[in-house]
Image (cartoon, rainbow, N blue to C red; front, side):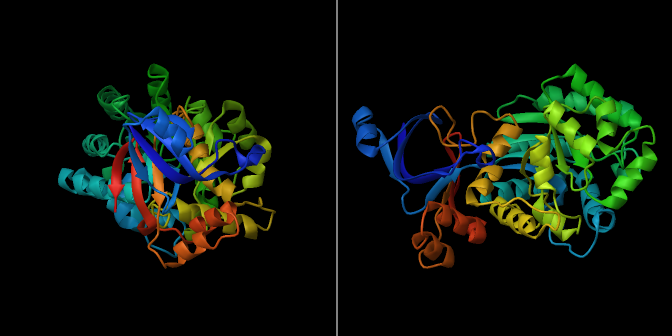
Length: 428
């Protein structure tokens, strides 16, 4: 048992529905075998647990573990290619890199780099777009289990419009998908997600094969892309002329439900938003990627008004890194500039999108904030004394401003410690 004495910021109630930042300057969190059993003052905690170790974290700010709802395993070495729209970027930057994961040694190296990227950035849970190769997925799941993170991921499937090395067929996709589900889904903190790359590279039969896996394994997840780029949307309509719209390609295949996370959705139709809300699916908002690829402004207001659940994704490697703090502040910038009328976001909204919204989106009810009964997934923001972020936090007018400084200036270098389920996974 450990008592963590800390300055704590979290958002147990959504600021989008009236909640506010919960901030306390000196609170004691009692953690027993990874579970937060009390949230109280230090004298009370010590009186109840006189033999417990006390860890003083008040030099920094403790927040919940960050939750990334869209990030690509094979693209850690493709971060930073700028100046191309989506389909051009895929052809020249991402897909050649993804093909290299057919080599097991290469896949193992990328898996370690990817997991280091997550933990260094304070990401404790993630919906991970996997590899096109079953062996690479075994390697990744094995490495993720050792790292201890909460990972949902799966084999990426496509049968057209990609390099030949990345294509599969219906029978292989089903066989390999079921094998990976049997091997990894529900093992430790791992879960499986059916992952058609997008309807631009997956025809109706392949999408339906993924839907069959969901029907046979109803507790698995689904993730893919939707409405990211106008050329992509046009291409999907040509490949799937029977579908009402992009979303309908997934709906017809049995891939749309409460366990579905769809990345981007920059150019949705009203019917799509209504249907996403109806089934309870999630839009993963990826701000730096939308900016880097010039995909457009994410229509957050339309999503919220339609009742669509939204959380943050880094979209490595079109996104510019694993840092969800940067994604939060980029979302703020884009909403400020949206010519159609963005949502006025404050620092509590950003923390919610990066933590509790992600937990709710991924049905990780055990994490997302630092309340009693939650598992201790946490991040200590503790910048070097005298550095701009340290100055900003110390001289902030209130806790909301201090949190804003964290999002505006925070980097993985300012993250001193990261815990998952009470286990320390990063310590600087």
